Image (tube, helix red, strand yellow):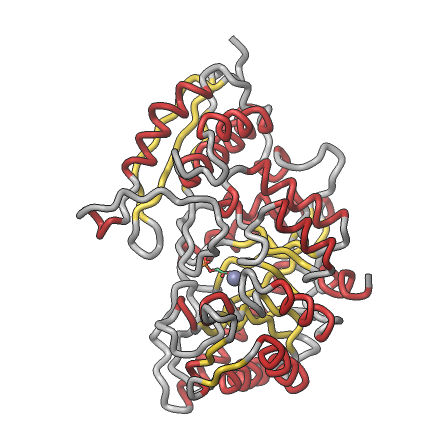
Length: 433
Ligand code: PGA
Ligand code: ZN
């Protein structure tokens, strides 16, 4: 038998960073190589994401994944036995065909992704390559991504204290990945010190490790991050830009209006929300806006893409890492960058195809973790091997976040001149294109 043929799958129920169950899987190959992977999970999930299978019932308040685990151990193990793990496209195609549904609702995208990623890890091990090499095109140089680092959270990640879900630091002035992380850690600490000086608690940490401060308004949060950058001895807009994830799907009404709860329940039409965001952009060094409008507000998205041209307009819930939705965006001139979360679509091959299509169309690509994560680091290798140019995994604290930064720090330290660092060009290249 071929040394890289899959001989068995073994899945089990593990815990994620929010204490909820998730699927873990090990793939074993004929030659003895193994690969293990765990899958993440979102809180502000888009309606069009692939289906995450949960048990319901009593265990873990209905969040158990024992059925998804059983699907790996039974149906998916039988379907993949004998397949060549180095042929990711065939493995992923088989996983999808075995499920048979459009959004993997029968066996669960969590079951399918666990097998898909563990197969890639096993294939890399069997061929004696780092995962970032195994997932890359043969001649591609490894590219360390520009990080986007969570400083302050609101929305679904922090008890909805403010409407905007995430305020992130973008280390524009850094010349290496290591310098970028050091800058962001300084901003995180600087922001905490500014909060403490105001007498506000800094021990409240949100899902992605950002500060979960209770603030009076979205503007106050922007003000605070700018103050944090300055307190860290850095220049806002020069050394460090701000990215926001508005996650507007979380506060859209059925009628298509938006309600800013933190601003006295202000109700805004889509064009008024765009003007509100434009006024923030005029006052603060915002370089990237994610999910500025809700997931199905295509006309609002067209407006914001035109109105805020010159900034990264990033689609998360809008595109949900789906090729068909990205295609519509490209045709309609909607957004100029795509957030890529492999569990939104269910297989590595599908996520990879979205990255390629976006790059061909001149769209930026930001590989992203979820708010529910594990200590796993495969995401870091995908960013380097797929040359996404940008990555977002949360704050510079909490181990499920630092595990990913630490993997990237090691890759950069190890490769030295044999790798490139994307830097701010990942943004400016896109914006001048
Ligand atoms: P989620 O948040 O993982 O809860 O969806 C991350 C994001 O919205 O980017
Ligand atoms: Zn998002």
